[in-house]
Length: 411
View: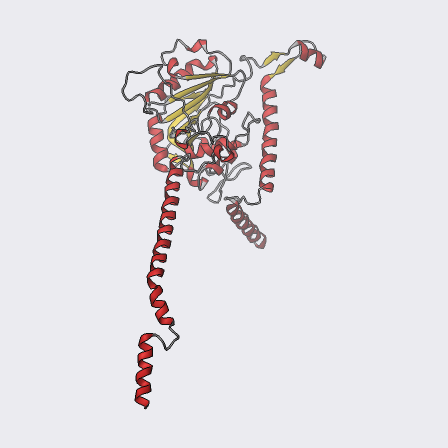
C-alpha cells in the first residue's frame, strides 16, 4: 500500500501536480518571458545608441568642445533644419568670385590672429610688426582709434588686413565688440597686442611652438630689460631661460617665493601683449566688462581663464622677447594738453582752460579698476555654487606664515 502511494506521489511530482501545477505554469510562460526580456534589451540598446548619437552631434556642434545652448531651445530657430545652422564665423577675407572647383569648401589658411589698436603716429612700428606676422601666415586686424585709415593704404600689406574704425576707443572696447569667441573660433591663438612693441628679437612661429609645447594657455613675450616702461618684474626677460612661470622677489612690498601662488608673482601676464589659446580667450572674452573699457584689473584675474592651474598654464616666453616703448597716444593728438569745447568752458566757467588728457584717462582707469573689484566680489557673494580654485593655496600660504610668525615669537 505504501509503495502505491509513493508511486502516485512521484507521478504527481513529474506532472507538476504536487505544487498545484505552478511548475507547469512557469514552464509554459518561459518562452513569453524570454521574448519580453529580448524586447526590453532591444529597447535599452536603441535608447543608448540614440543618446550616444546625439552626444556625437552635440560635439560636432559645440564650441571648442563645450556644449552650446541653442537659441532654438527658445523657439527662435525652430523654422530652420539643424544642419543648415552656421553659428560661427571668422575674419578671413573672401574673394568676390572664384573659379576653383572647391569654392564651396571652407579652407582656412591662417590659424592664428594678430589684433592691434593703431594710430597713424605709430605707423612705422606697426608696419614692422605686421610684416613679421604676415610672413607666418597670421590674420591681421587693425583697430584704428584715431579714425585715420587712408594713411595706411600705401603699405603693400594693407589690403590684406582688416581695418575697423572707432575714434578714441581702447583695445578692450574693440576686443569685446569684434573678437567674439564665435568669430575667432578657427584661430589657435589670439595675439591681442599694443602698437608700441618692438619685434626685432621676436619670431611668431618660434613663439607659438614654445607655448604649444609647454601647454601655456595664456602667455606673453618677455620684455627687454631696457624697455622704456616696465610695470611688473615677472614680465622682464630672463636671459638664461626659454620661458618662466614665476618670479622671485625679496624686496619691496610684494614678496615672491616658491609659496606664491598668484599674481603678480606667478600665473600672470600684463595687458600690453597677451596671447590666448582658443579656450582661454573664450573665458577671457566673458571676463571683459562691456562698459569698463580700459580693462584695469582684468590681468590680475586672467589666471581664472587658464583652463587649469594658473601656475602652470600661464607663462612668459624669454627666448622670444619684445621692446616696450611705452608710448601713450590714445586719447589725444600727441599733446598732453587739449583745449575744451565752448560748452565745456561754459560749464567749467574757465575760458581757455586745458585738460591733461593722460591724467583724465588715468583717473578714469582707476575708477574702473575699483568698479571691477566691486563686481568681482559681488559676483562671488551672489554665486553660491562657485568655488575659488585657488582658495586652498591662499589658506596654505597663510598657515605657513602663521607658523613662521609663531616660530619667531618663540625665539
